Figure 1 (tube, rainbow, N blue to C red):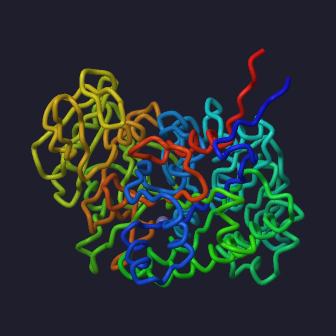
Figure 2: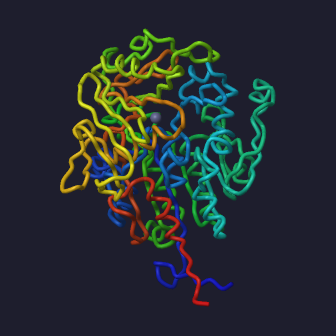
Length: 504
Ligand SMILES: [Zn+2]
């Protein structure tokens, strides 16, 4: 059957698309650096393209749940990846995609590595959804994933660990993972691209290739190969580590380094002008970060707060426990294991004023309270209220709990962008009873073995500080849903490659 390419770009065929996912890229820092003229590549793309400083990401604002939504275009209630750490009721164990060394150590280094390498893409990400890679490949497009955490595609790739790690793990980590036609997962996925990258970017100290320099070299090699994939997702992780350490107000140097990498990619086309003639560039963050206070006062110790209950400790087998706590930095999932205990737990959580929101499931909807206050809001999908994204809701109680403003039947969001869909998405990512809590700005949750970020940055909550990220699109005027959310990016990118069959 004959297909005609009716590309929005006119008759000169479709452009290639490069999506750069910069971990913890934040709009306020981006804008202040552009004002100081310290990030010329990002400035060029912003000035020559379109820019949205309030692009709404997914809740929990953690890379695993965010990337799953980016690639599938749906919230966690559909794609089923609840966060970076969560409780698996059938397997009766905590699933961790490596939230710090000490957590992984307690839960088993091999088990956590297998979660990231195999289970996230092959088992946890719902079979009922398709990824952007899968859909583009089904349409005959060539795609590449450079170091992205979520990369499910139609092709199988062999994973091979370095000899020493193989010995330490008893050779249990080698195997096959699915991905797009071209896949790098640090140096672990076996391919020709890996060989083209200098050795010094691939060693232990460089996290076996999980670094910005490796990713940019891989992307550059593909651009210069004259066989650049139609769509390429390039994940740049380094900025996240810096912002955690330095806090969001002092991470300028990190962003300057990111910009140098983007310059390298643009330079690969001969000129920056030529780059946006040949390609559509999309730059996004995955979540923001909030500056955490300088001392212990700013960590909400859940081990202490939940002392009246028998909490499962990391590494323990599930037995006569009351609950499991899975701490996603500035949010946490609590899973009551015994009937009738949830109410008692909520009462205990309500005594802590540094907790921002406490939410749980009720009658196909969600109840939300604020820590330390009496106000309560209930909401459920379907009803007479419509939010600014066109979703319908029933709301009962005090809209102020989620900083909602209802004007002539329309729900507008304040401090918690897209709060209803995002909170619902998190709580219905699993079918078991669960409570989700978030920390007030400047605070984070802490449990034994979990990482702390005092005086640094941290994320995970529903608040706008963690939730609003920049979106930059250069090289196309193709429309995107407005106001845009992360889940709108998949249909936008598919739209860039639309083909239309002629009549008959
Ligand atoms: Zn982070």
